[in-house]
Length: 364
Image 1: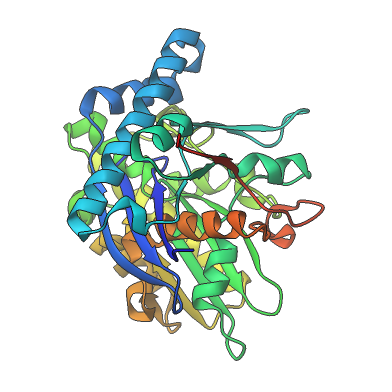
Image 2: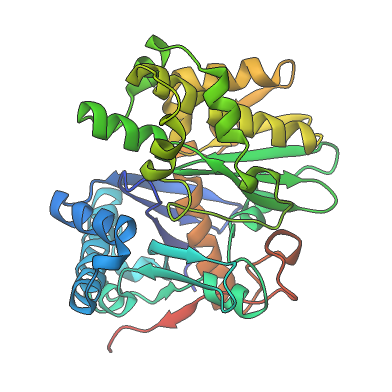
């Protein structure tokens, strides 16, 4: 069987679809990767579903699910074309899907991702593994984060406790040691992206330049950090259901700040919350991946907060920081097809390890 797998990931920040073609024949090697923009009307539709669930119809959900599955299929075809690979060379696709709701703390917890895997399998002709999170929840877990098992496979060392920090829309931590733990920290890029999009019409704060032009409000930062989520013990996970623009506005009502000062304080929130968790994890080295690595001001803030600990990109350890999560879902697909567990109960709180994901077969 081929050891080439495709991984697809689109996160809470809705900043694009990451796709990675990964070769597992000799370790873990990303052969080719890309980030594809969402069609703007599809992105707007997804944002409306995530941010305004009360106004979503069943037709809107169903159509968007199909539309996203078709979009994912186009991204896979582009990835293989650019890599010069045929579909026959690929064993399977691992597709995370687009999370529209993650509610692990209800009486009947659930998580929900869109992106019809039936269409993805039919349009690419490839075995597709999807719906990774719900089996972990069925065993009492949070359904997230799922990437720590992959972090252990890629970056674990017997002689050093490491923290791997993924900064996407939400930031999360994996502590690699004798026991692997992992959990969501809180906001990553998501709040900064939403604030600059509303106030300046820009999709993100390039290099953190706007944040750098403002001043941090220590009072507002303290109010942000007083949110009970930050003091909850793991396992814990979150998303835009909790940390969103309405959350920011509720806090800033009492603080007459310039818009740039709010952005500076949001950046400080991300850096401060990450640094606190790294210190509590007693990490000796911090590896960073995700879109946050491209925010120069954020990375400098992390280095200041964590000094003298080394803060390094996962690129320095063999894996492009932009595509760690996409590669992880390729790995999770491989795990599923081999009937091997994909979750870590020490991370998610599940009662047992289990293979994750449902398998969708294309027509013959």
